[in-house]
Length: 337
Ligand code: WQD
Image 1 (cartoon, rainbow, N blue to C red):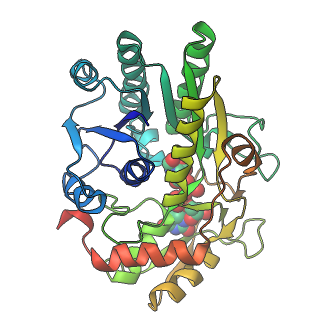
Image 2: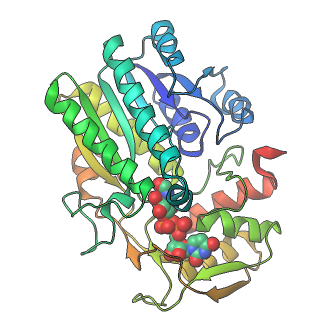
């Protein structure tokens, strides 16, 4: 097995990936600056993983990252650390370029100096912009429709150019669709700060009584019930996708870009109904105007991940909602308690 460095390690997807990598027999080292996560996650990882997490509080944009590589000598990196709010990226583009692009460049330069040349990169279905055809395959046209998406697209470009410049580099760009749900223990999960931008955590907070009503952003899209359709994927399936991508980088030469989605789209109202069934709580909502920048529908063709990684998502929407509800009801204030 190998030693894997996770950046953004205390975050939602990273913390679930941490447990999946440990279960697969890897040694994990985590770094995070807690700019959008809580140190409490480390305590939960110790409880769930059965050992004290090896962790260093470091900002990946700073020279301090070099000492982490000197101390731990990782065989590969999974780079999660990035700002990820689409709306915020539009109002604060420079912060997004500095953190997301500057952070990736610093990670790659530090890896190069340390002789570590395998990286798994958190990309996003946002790189597809407004889909021309569905389901989305990896060769679909890409375009940046907001600064956040631009940082993901530029990140993929940086890694492609790096691989072309030095064949020793192996890169895996994982295009996440809509990550939702939580570890079955209910001890870790999604804990957005402030008002949740994304649908499932907002619905969860309505169910637990932290929010009054859900605003449904438009019901006049060209979709079966008029509300937006997305490819929701359980965060534990996503974590397993990272384990499979790392296994491929460690066992075979070459690089890859794959969609991590289920291949099935669900509408906002379908998710609301599933959440009411999972929680036993009503989710009152109002139909309001569309949210600028939203697309009608977006869902993956996951065939490439199946072919290259032998991976496919296994959890259905009901399980995503059940696991989300268990986390939310056991942690009404998230990690901020
Ligand atoms: C899903 C659907 C909304 C909130 C974003 C980013 C993407 C990725 C995932 C980081 C849409 C509707 C939402 C609400 C609603 N993030 N909605 N009321 O926009 O598909 O993707 O998050 O990688 O990059 O773009 O996810 O959960 O925000 O929206 O009606 O309060 O729910 O209109 O149809 P999205 P979302």
